[in-house]
View 1: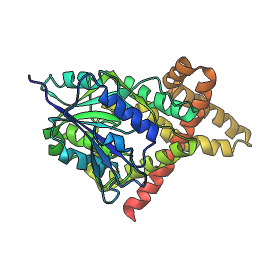
View 2 (view 1 turned 30 degrees about the vertical axis):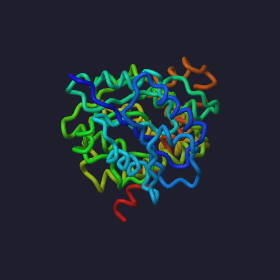
View 3 (view 1 turned 90 degrees about the vertical axis):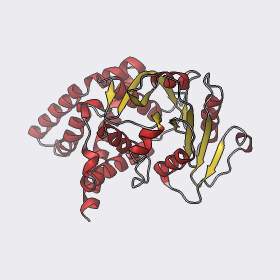
Length: 326
């Protein structure tokens, strides 16, 4: 099979200049040159460096469309047979595009999901925790193929992308718009390859507050679209980066909080201790992964953040359910 040309599409809204520079330089230095690089400026309030114009086809949106709309805009302008979407805070390896191209030599493959590397140059704790969390969830997937994906760095055959309807522009924020595209591809019988051997670096600096707000928003939009759009439920969880341990943890986290509040009662205190043990057992593989990568102290802090993430997702679910029926 003849290799298809790759169009790289980078959606961007007020990006971190240094992260964007690393992102673009990595693409520029790729061992396989893409057919084109399309940078979609989603109505940013900042000025982009003038020296990137010679390397990128810069498309500026007159109004902010959100990441789904920005990616779709770039896809409509792209000429390549493979659309490779790379976030502006992601740095690919020199051979990333070459490896992606190689995966499509199998004609059955319609899309390729890459994985975050274990290393991130960002030094703050929350960024490193989230990077490892996202990597872990993909690395433990046993299936070769996925029923959805995450769009930090993915590649999709052009025909399959448009047949699936592109990214869901009803989702205005960076949350579940990529998941919906994956579900649509999967529902139509397309194969999404999980390429664990293709690693990319995450350059986003995530504060604690930013992470909590993001998780709440993702929970809210997931629940709202769950009720409003039945087709978004067609997902085989065993073929996603949403492990059963996460689902169980989300379910029991409100109970843990309630038991903690009532722990002045000896019986409730015992029940709370048992719930903590259960929470630790359910997530033991993930916590041990954190300990192996970064040590015991990092693991303990990570366990606390993970619990709070579960709680914020629950509050997001509640908000999304209210909005769905409002």
